[in-house]
Image 1 (cartoon, helix red, strand yellow):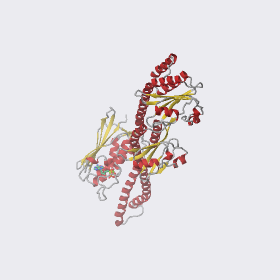
Image 2: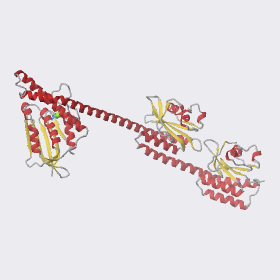
Image 3: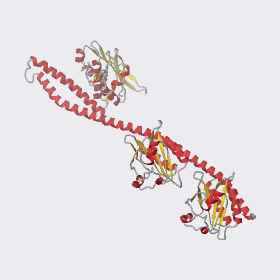
Image 4: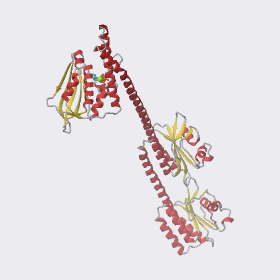
Length: 580
Ligand SMILES: Nc1ncnc2c1ncn2[C@@H]1O[C@H](COP(=O)(O)OP(=O)(O)OP(=O)(O)O)[C@@H](O)[C@H]1O
Ligand SMILES: [Mg+2]
């Protein structure tokens, strides 16, 4: 016959049930049940074990007086394990004399168990959710106590099941929102090192693991490497592509989840030995790019307070697909950066080379030109008639070479960013005439008409006269060079209004020459680009005139435009601010 429960105790149980139903936080609910049960029945300690679906094991969620320690029991192991397995409550008077008692728990906790009262906790459909175990009541647990605790456990079971569902939902929600945050954080990171660090840290956090490492596949060397491992500063680990758990995941492309690393033959304890870390359990997942190729491996070690679950594996899978995209982006960015730096180095070498060569060419040119001049002027005696033509040719070629070297030097100077303008008010009418004058002989020889057309009241412009003259000389040189005999070259200047209402002067150099095809209008401003780049081309030059012109005009804060059609001539145009 079942003992009757006194009214006072019944009231106590009802009070616990009322409190329990109002509590949705699993941890608080468990603490409340244990505490109330101990108080109601005069027990020293209590433990509530929950049955884990994943492992089929009992796991203590909170043991009163055992803060932070988790006890795990298999079904049938110890009194709690038996109660969970059979669904029947057990009362023990002398634990250490009872064969069912599992002494290892006492050894681990340092507590001495004497009496035990243990009852099952069941859900709505009678399924076992866990067990509630009370320890040590010096007077011994009575059948009445067993009845009271049984009632309490059966009444709080539903509350416990609900709280477990809430708890699961909360955890999942929390993890999902973190996962989304990780996605945004990593998709904007382009520095590979920083990216790997962020990914490792967030993974450890998200999966409550001690360490996470991202290994990247280096196909060229047949290795996996990791530059950042959380907890080790900036150490580079390299392992053969097939070695260890990470290697097997990289080669097979399937995730691995193991609870005891040292019993798995694939585990390579070398890294542990080198780093002094002790690996217990491992979750390892491949990282695939959009084309499904494995580009790396995610390795997460030592889950805090248990083993990695199927949910952890799912989380890691979605994390790794996001990480793969971010890593590939960062790797591409890295490559582009490296290529760009290499280009810059090459560009600098080219500039340095041009600079040295130009200076070296200029030095011996000075005496060549000087002596040719002296010889022609009769400074060294009258030249025989046959010689004169030869010396004239020397002087002519020398001057051309000199002009090329000078423009190369200007180019190098501008190319190295040395455009320090000294601006002043410049009288354009004067400057344009001066430039055009210097081409008279050439124009005459090539049967070209050269003219300057300027408005009468032309305001002065704010410019560096030296640089401006260089630019205009190059423009007129091109116009004269690329126009056939009988053609016309015109240099024009007229006042104009800028969009901001300020006064400016527009300068244009127009020719009736061979013109430039539309698709090459941008190209001709590039250094060394020539429309006819063949060795047999008819026009001389190295192809830097327009690059120099562009640099000078842009240094003045302006822009040079081109209108041209093959066979119809070309017009180069730019504006300079009026000096007020
Ligand atoms: N007025 C023009 N008419 C037709 N083509 C032109 C004209 N100006 C420039 N070009 C084309 O643009 C190319 C580049 O001009 P740029 O002045 O930079 O070099 P270049 O005249 O060939 O040599 P450099 O000026 O260094 O002596 C020329 O080779 C030519 O093909
Ligand atoms: Mg030129």
